[in-house]
Length: 266
Image (tube, rainbow, N blue to C red):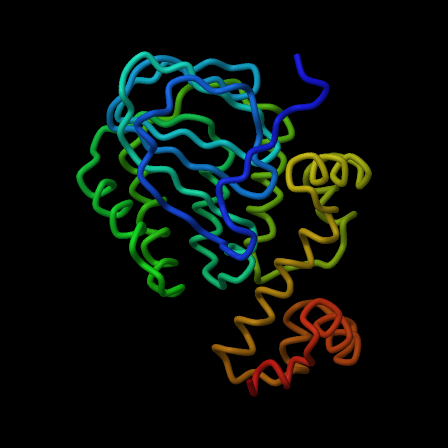
């Protein structure tokens, strides 16, 4: 038994997304975690066990496993695996302005295992992702893949931790961008918990404070408004519930390094 959990890194520091075939020589691994990315494993062949945290899943292809960065997992395979591994960093999601992509990912990231009923299009999408380099095209392929997995799959019935459900609901509330509030207390009340508990849950699941999670959503929505609407900076500030335009400008610059108008003009 080691003094600490092994941490494996299979993606370069500057890379936000990596998709590759599952290595066929993988049979057994020691318990380990991946600190910087979500790992999505699609297996169309293979047998044995995959353990995520304290739950062991029988490998019954075709199936998809989701391993979040804070989770510990290991393999004990008894047959040659075949499939794909998708590594997704938070930076890719931050850069995306696609609300639906983020919503689909939020639904999937709360799961551990999905058994698939149909795989032809999923095979194709994974294959395309292994060679695609354009960010916008990759965004579209990911959205199609996540939607297909949800449609074609049946989540394994696993008792979710309360924190997993809370994070999912928190994100769903934030996705309701017509009423974004820069207020941790506001969302804590909606989740029927204290602001302190919401912060603890966010820190544990996302390695961010609740305020930082809210800020990400506000900045993403502000960018969308600046890029895809003709609303003035003052109008956008009002839509995002800022007290005045100057506060919004300072807030936006704090997180992006640019004023809203400079961002719009670039």
